[in-house]
Amino acid sequence: MKSLLFLNLFARWRPCSALRCTLVLLVCAAALPARADVEASAEAFDRYFHRLMVEADIPGGAYVIVDGDQVVGMGTYGVRIKGKRDQVDSHTVFRLASVSKTFAASTAAVLEHEEEFGWGDQVVSYVPQLSFKTPGLSRQLQIQHLLSHSSGLTPNAYDNYLEDNKPLSKILPKFANIDPRCTPGKCYGYQNVLFSLIEDVIEEATGVTYKRQLKDRIFAPLEMEDASLGWESYMASNNRAAPHIQTGRGWAAVEVEEEYYLAAPAAGVNASIADMAQWLKAQMGYFPKVLSPEVIADITTERVETRRHMRHRIWRDYLSHAGYGLGWRLYTMGDDRIIYHGGWVAGFRAAVAYSEKQKIGIAILLNAESRVIADLTANFVVDITGNGELATAMAGGE
Image 1 (tube, rainbow, N blue to C red):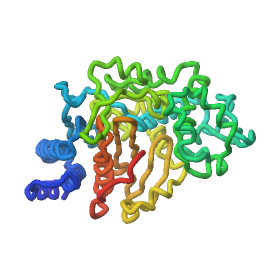
Image 2 (image 1 turned 60 degrees about the vertical axis):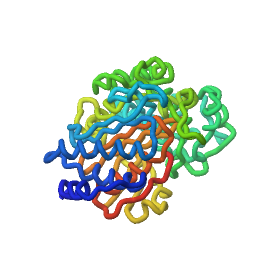
Image 3 (image 1 turned 90 degrees about the horizontal axis):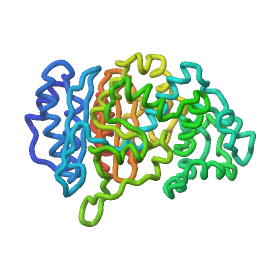
Image 4 (image 1 turned 90 degrees about the vertical axis):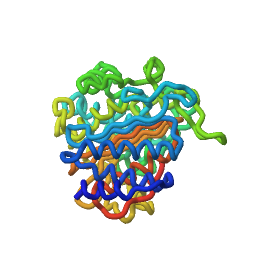
């Protein structure tokens, strides 16, 4: 059925607007047959991807589609920096922005399952300098609340200080001026600063830095050869994409901002599309020695509801439930769940999603702050589950 749908759409294709191409592209992505006609389907997807990138005038991008443990489609487009000749290839490094949270939570889960610490441990046992206005509330904050954005604090608390290039050590004392709006664990509020305290927890519990744990437990065993953590590592790469922002004259390359790199677990990972293929396979269970079934089940167990994601007009006809696990968004559609995260930081967009039931996933990386990636992801997650008409766009952001 999927293969027939794909071929029919391809036969009927005609020149289209950027939006129409977006919709057709994601029908094709969802319709990719894993075992039959895979080469023809992947080639057609690649043509659609390139056409959409031209329509949206994106400087550079890359995608990968994984079915089970097989890459069924991978493509790149454009240049690393507008106006230059260096092409994006499968090993070009992009910033992952908040997709970094999936790496931090997975690394932490591996360590928690090794009993280095417990999800219910008090954060102040590892980060004693953290305190809320009401000290008793800070003692209720558990490690799992950091990674599920369920601290109870107002969303994005003190992100403005990150944007001013303030290190976490300078931001942390400011939490003594505020209190959670609900008891930790009871409500959702997206965080970057608090999420990144998992770095301190890991180092205090294991005596090994987060950067080393990430390399030894994730990057190296998964052979993610281009992946790294931090601004210095990104700048040291000879094959890196430059960030681009929209101006009155189109896309313009800008300097790589250091700000969110200061919150490394929340937004500090750099990776290529080849790396993201490995990451999708691992998250879908095909590297059990790296991420065991128990670890995957743990990080995809809901810790808090995210009801606001169900109110957007795009989702309300399809989504029966929305929540957040540990470093992952969890969207229920029909009898399937989409495990998803997006990222957006100055000049870059990233997205990764997979069907829990079908074990089909997609990752997309762009070196531009374009909402095209949001349209792609929304259409993919709706259509991959077979839940009717395509959505037209995704609620932006992360």
